[in-house]
Image (tube, rainbow, N blue to C red):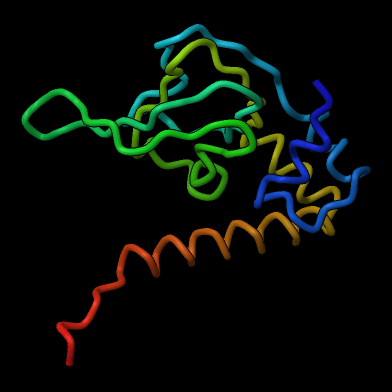
Length: 149
Protein backbone atom coordinates (compact mmCIF):
# COMPACT_ATOMS: atom_id res chain seq x y z
CA UNK A 1 0.00 0.00 0.00
CA UNK A 2 1.18 3.48 -0.83
CA UNK A 3 1.52 5.23 2.52
CA UNK A 4 2.04 8.86 1.50
CA UNK A 5 -1.63 9.47 0.47
CA UNK A 6 -2.74 7.93 3.78
CA UNK A 7 -0.31 10.03 5.83
CA UNK A 8 -1.48 13.20 4.07
CA UNK A 9 -4.88 12.57 5.67
CA UNK A 10 -3.49 12.20 9.21
CA UNK A 11 -3.89 15.43 11.20
CA UNK A 12 -0.49 15.05 12.86
CA UNK A 13 1.19 15.19 9.45
CA UNK A 14 -0.79 18.13 8.00
CA UNK A 15 1.53 20.68 6.40
CA UNK A 16 4.32 18.23 5.54
CA UNK A 17 5.46 17.71 1.96
CA UNK A 18 5.63 14.32 0.25
CA UNK A 19 9.42 14.32 0.73
CA UNK A 20 9.01 15.01 4.44
CA UNK A 21 6.38 12.27 4.71
CA UNK A 22 8.86 9.85 3.11
CA UNK A 23 11.17 10.57 6.06
CA UNK A 24 8.32 9.67 8.42
CA UNK A 25 7.74 6.39 6.55
CA UNK A 26 11.48 5.65 6.68
CA UNK A 27 11.58 5.72 10.50
CA UNK A 28 8.42 3.65 10.87
CA UNK A 29 8.07 -0.09 11.27
CA UNK A 30 5.18 -1.80 9.48
CA UNK A 31 3.27 -4.36 11.51
CA UNK A 32 0.15 -6.46 11.10
CA UNK A 33 -1.63 -8.10 14.03
CA UNK A 34 -4.49 -10.61 14.12
CA UNK A 35 -7.94 -9.87 15.53
CA UNK A 36 -7.97 -9.35 19.31
CA UNK A 37 -4.20 -8.91 19.44
CA UNK A 38 -3.23 -6.24 21.97
CA UNK A 39 -1.05 -3.57 20.40
CA UNK A 40 -0.26 -2.00 23.76
CA UNK A 41 -1.57 -2.37 27.30
CA UNK A 42 -2.83 0.35 29.64
CA UNK A 43 -0.09 1.19 32.13
CA UNK A 44 2.77 -0.05 29.93
CA UNK A 45 5.61 2.28 28.99
CA UNK A 46 4.74 4.75 26.24
CA UNK A 47 7.48 4.42 23.65
CA UNK A 48 5.82 4.82 20.25
CA UNK A 49 3.06 6.28 18.11
CA UNK A 50 0.93 4.02 15.89
CA UNK A 51 -0.67 5.10 12.61
CA UNK A 52 -3.46 2.73 11.61
CA UNK A 53 -3.03 1.71 7.97
CA UNK A 54 -6.02 -0.63 7.71
CA UNK A 55 -8.38 -2.50 9.97
CA UNK A 56 -9.90 -1.25 13.18
CA UNK A 57 -8.72 -0.95 16.76
CA UNK A 58 -10.63 -0.64 20.00
CA UNK A 59 -9.49 1.67 22.78
CA UNK A 60 -10.19 -0.01 26.14
CA UNK A 61 -10.02 1.51 29.60
CA UNK A 62 -9.37 -0.55 32.74
CA UNK A 63 -12.10 -0.23 35.36
CA UNK A 64 -11.34 0.16 39.09
CA UNK A 65 -13.64 -2.78 39.89
CA UNK A 66 -11.85 -4.95 37.34
CA UNK A 67 -12.31 -5.65 33.66
CA UNK A 68 -12.30 -3.00 30.99
CA UNK A 69 -14.74 -0.99 28.90
CA UNK A 70 -14.52 -0.03 25.26
CA UNK A 71 -14.23 3.69 24.86
CA UNK A 72 -13.65 4.29 21.20
CA UNK A 73 -12.98 2.65 17.83
CA UNK A 74 -10.43 3.94 15.34
CA UNK A 75 -9.52 3.00 11.78
CA UNK A 76 -7.30 3.76 8.81
CA UNK A 77 -5.69 7.18 8.86
CA UNK A 78 -6.06 7.62 12.60
CA UNK A 79 -3.38 7.32 15.23
CA UNK A 80 -2.95 6.15 18.79
CA UNK A 81 -0.20 6.63 21.31
CA UNK A 82 0.72 10.19 20.37
CA UNK A 83 1.09 11.29 24.01
CA UNK A 84 4.04 8.89 24.30
CA UNK A 85 5.97 11.08 21.87
CA UNK A 86 5.88 13.92 24.37
CA UNK A 87 5.99 12.52 27.87
CA UNK A 88 7.01 8.83 27.68
CA UNK A 89 4.43 8.25 30.42
CA UNK A 90 2.43 5.08 30.96
CA UNK A 91 -0.26 4.23 28.41
CA UNK A 92 -3.66 5.66 29.31
CA UNK A 93 -5.57 2.84 27.60
CA UNK A 94 -5.25 -0.59 26.02
CA UNK A 95 -5.44 -0.79 22.22
CA UNK A 96 -6.43 -4.04 20.47
CA UNK A 97 -7.34 -5.07 16.92
CA UNK A 98 -11.05 -5.82 16.41
CA UNK A 99 -13.09 -7.08 13.47
CA UNK A 100 -10.14 -8.76 11.79
CA UNK A 101 -6.45 -8.07 11.46
CA UNK A 102 -5.09 -4.55 11.71
CA UNK A 103 -2.02 -3.05 10.05
CA UNK A 104 -0.17 -0.02 11.30
CA UNK A 105 3.07 1.91 11.22
CA UNK A 106 4.90 2.07 14.55
CA UNK A 107 7.05 5.17 15.03
CA UNK A 108 9.32 4.91 18.06
CA UNK A 109 9.66 8.00 20.20
CA UNK A 110 13.49 8.04 20.00
CA UNK A 111 13.41 7.91 16.18
CA UNK A 112 10.66 10.54 16.13
CA UNK A 113 12.66 12.94 18.33
CA UNK A 114 15.84 12.34 16.34
CA UNK A 115 14.03 13.16 13.08
CA UNK A 116 12.55 16.32 14.63
CA UNK A 117 16.02 17.45 15.72
CA UNK A 118 17.64 16.63 12.37
CA UNK A 119 14.94 18.30 10.30
CA UNK A 120 13.63 21.23 12.30
CA UNK A 121 10.97 22.07 9.69
CA UNK A 122 9.44 18.64 10.24
CA UNK A 123 9.94 18.99 14.00
CA UNK A 124 8.21 22.37 14.16
CA UNK A 125 5.23 21.19 12.11
CA UNK A 126 4.78 17.97 14.07
CA UNK A 127 5.12 19.65 17.46
CA UNK A 128 2.69 22.39 16.44
CA UNK A 129 0.17 19.79 15.26
CA UNK A 130 0.59 17.77 18.46
CA UNK A 131 0.08 20.89 20.57
CA UNK A 132 -3.06 21.84 18.63
CA UNK A 133 -4.48 18.32 18.99
CA UNK A 134 -3.82 18.13 22.71
CA UNK A 135 -5.18 21.65 23.21
CA UNK A 136 -8.40 20.65 21.43
CA UNK A 137 -8.72 17.51 23.57
CA UNK A 138 -8.17 19.44 26.79
CA UNK A 139 -10.73 22.07 25.84
CA UNK A 140 -13.29 19.36 25.05
CA UNK A 141 -12.57 17.51 28.28
CA UNK A 142 -12.82 20.67 30.39
CA UNK A 143 -15.88 22.07 28.62
CA UNK A 144 -18.85 22.32 30.92
CA UNK A 145 -22.00 23.64 29.31
CA UNK A 146 -23.67 26.35 31.33
CA UNK A 147 -26.92 25.61 33.06
CA UNK A 148 -28.69 27.97 30.71
CA UNK A 149 -27.64 31.21 32.42
